[in-house]
Image (cartoon, rainbow, N blue to C red; front, side):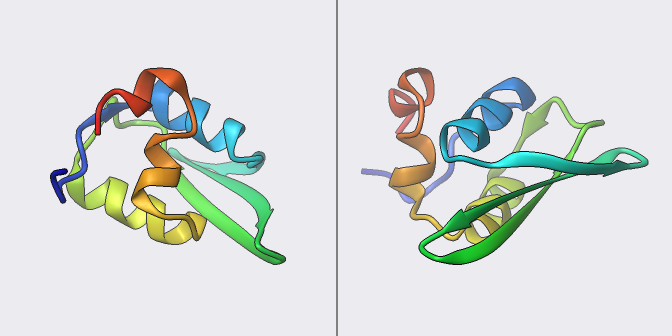
Length: 84
């Protein structure tokens, strides 16, 4: 299994966050903030609406912000589960 984070489209990232229980709480400029309780801790993930393809660096940051593993993040939806 590769350690890289396969590129995801904005729609895929939003679907993953929704599947993990995140809800949009605010948008300011081109950034939206999503929050959820993960493992009893309130987590926030920031998503840039101006970006269509999220690269390794941004995805690694979102996975860390979400407080889940890479496998949990990509495995949240059927479509992205196939990418890892």
